[in-house]
Length: 292
Ligand code: ATP
Ligand code: ZN
Image (cartoon, rainbow, N blue to C red):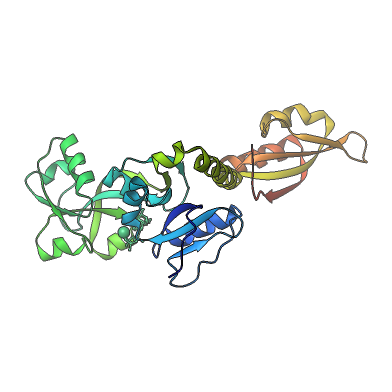
């Protein structure tokens, strides 16, 4: 039997499912080198003291809470449902979905209040209970572990609370959203004792810096442009950058080259403003990592 290196930190990742590929890509983009083919139970990183353990996503909150693993990647949906006593370290920006209350397409239900006295099938009984208690509506909750969508067809539930991402699966199952309970994304969790342990904490901090570097880089683009010296002040205002832009003179008198970063979510409007101000030859590059 292969042995884990117990000196290393352990990170639980979903073995096979919707979080797997993105979690692995994310760890690789942070510079971690490891093999992840096939039916492995775990991978040892070549260049970082980390063991990546592949498990069912449902088990990750418990494994992190108990300390079976130091860290884990799980959807906020699971964390809200299980309420493990763990520390949330970082939102990871993938695995986006939402937990929704849905009803059969042909039903007349438009408000969650209309479920009073009815049966809701779900794999998220705690989230469902909390939601209906908050609006003071009494429902019967039926816990189902998979294929919840079938229950209205079987006539055993009038509503379903389940994860929705694109809505296409919902449409396929003749369901429609009545209300969104909450949004979810993948979260990096930590065992509370692990982060209190000085040696582990140092490694966790170092891992966090790498992961945050990847996340920050996704939010920015590197931009180089040429502009007349005269409009520098206006350009600085339009692109505050991280601290301030880097300026170098061009061979053409009165012209400068400016290097800065632009936030992804206001990228196009910023570029339009820069063009309108008189900037030209705008060159945009992706940023691999950004350590601030
Ligand atoms: P496992 O066998 O590991 O228990 P699973 O079938 O429970 O897998 P997946 O469907 O792979 O789980 O979903 C894992 C997580 O991915 C969900 O808990 C959720 O956080 C996230 N997710 C993102 N989009 C979706 C989606 N469209 N449907 C379900 N989950 C999604
Ligand atoms: Zn699962």
